[in-house]
Length: 169
Image (cartoon, rainbow, N blue to C red; front, side):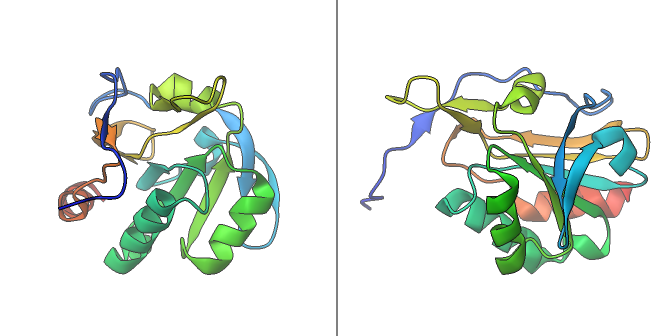
C-alpha cells in the first residue's frame, strides 16, 4: 500500500517513565475562553493525561485529538496538551476538537526538550515540533503511564491508554 508519505524512524527518547516525576514548566495555557501563563504543577490536581502533539492543523494533531475525543477520556481525567503552536492556533483547535482540554503553547520546544519528545524536522534547519506522546500523571505529577512515538508518524494505542486510565484514575 502506498502511504503518500515517508515513515521516519525517530531517535531513541529518554522521556519520563512510570514512577518518574514529570518535569514542571510554565507556558501559556489556552482554555476555551482565554489563556494565561500557568505551570504544570498548578494545573495537575488529579489524574491528568498530558498529550504532546505536532503543530495544530497537521493531520497527526487532528488524528490524536479526534481519537482522544472519541474515547471520551475527558470524562475520567483532566486533558492537557502541549505543542509548538501559538495560543491563537490553539484557540482554533479547541473550537474544532480537543473537547474539555486545555493546551500549553511551547513555540521554542523547551518543554519538548525537557521531556525528550522533540522532532527536529528534516530539511528545516532550526524547526522543531513535538512528536506524539502521552503521559498519564497522578496528582503529584508522578508518571503512571508513558508512550512516545519512535517513528513518524505514529500514534498511541488508545485502548492501552484507556486501560491505564481505568487502572490509575
